[in-house]
Length: 354
Image (cartoon, rainbow, N blue to C red; front, top):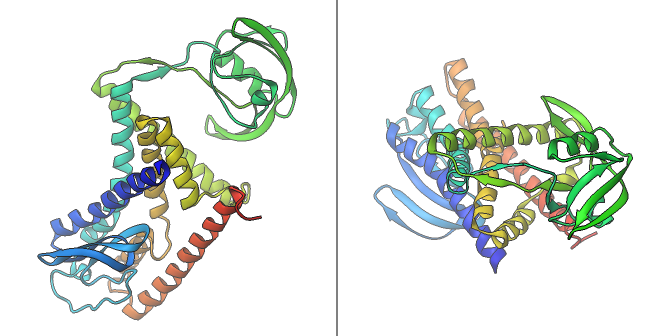
């Protein structure tokens, strides 16, 4: 039940605010909004207020705002040239209306990270005390547990997290003799590091990992510092998402690594069980992913619409409606195929199917 409620909370908020971004800008620039839907058709229930039908639809993988005079996912648009139609508006008005959805998701990430920083403070790493141990990684297999403190690597004493990671990172796929303190008792083991590619200082480097995370000592900060940290955290995650996409596009990462709705639901449940701040951090991360993925130039996504708008501005005339509809249908087919793939991929990754 926790997983279900956490998933509804995360996706419900993100879909609503994304579509609200489109909705509010459409209203500002004078575009008639015919439907505001959470979920994709068929429509389940809702209420029409003024010119807009506010509803909940059956397929809970997103949502949409249907604007008058816009060829979109519904593929049933009639364009009559009325001044309140999407197609009748200027390039900047149309571009702003479509971009408002991903922009809202990006702002959500910044606001949430800023709020978490303001309420919880900034984490400082002071020593080599371990707070997290990743399941199945070399550290866990060697018996290292949260709360332990690493004191030496290959006979060299370490007292800070930076000293320790520098030595481990420099030895990908190699053996390292590790000395640590567990409940006041000194232990040691030879650990074989895992080699991994990570973005470091703007370059992709192969480094050694053993699967540990530092203990953070929280320090309270003021609003301006919180805003700065919220922006920096969002930007760092933006680069991480971009790097992940680049790895997939260049074949350096497997499509098996893609997570879909089932994995998102699983992670939402785990985050909720870890506490509300963790769930909010997960919400911000998913919001950031939605912002970036939505601007991909794929028909059916906001990025596809932005491409159409830009092409029309360059050509000086609209793309024929029939052409748009065909391209939208192809785009929707691609998106549905991708959804089916990631669902089966999720089932494979959680060992439901083989």
